Length: 176
Image 1 (cartoon, rainbow, N blue to C red):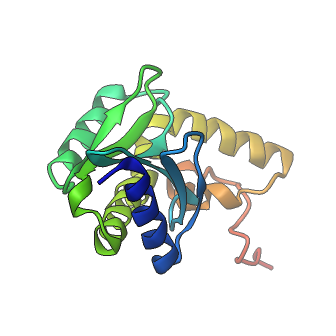
Image 2 (cartoon, rainbow, N blue to C red; image 1 turned 45 degrees about the vertical axis):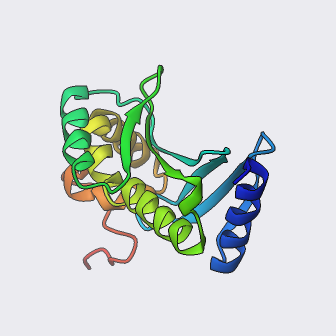
Image 3 (cartoon, rainbow, N blue to C red; image 1 turned 180 degrees about the vertical axis):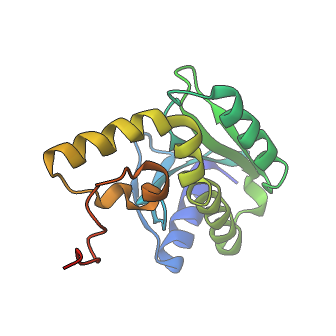
């Protein structure tokens, strides 16, 4: 199968499954956008060649702290990822990557591949933030509370960040 034929196959699979996508920076690349639960969305690069479909998705930026714990956590998850693995680029940013032989690519394979990529990027997201960015999150929480800013995007971490006297959840009513 040629790269152009593989692009057409992947495009057809994305259309059939209703996944949003656009043409990437290169002729042989499609970029899909997958909605998440913990992470707002996961952007997936699908690069087609004569031999394989390569997939890559950003997970988190280079952790601020606890690199050993973050990488140990990711390596442990690598054991359970079918056909994919977490990797780190030269700046320390974390990605999930993989390759599938071109001959085996069809709608079902693309759908399964994107499902595994989404799970790998979305499921551990909050835990990775706590492992690699807790100090920054505490500073952000304090800054927002002190200025009366919204805490909405940090609510999932309230149990780790809240201090006595902080405002109640947006859905809670103050006593009285």
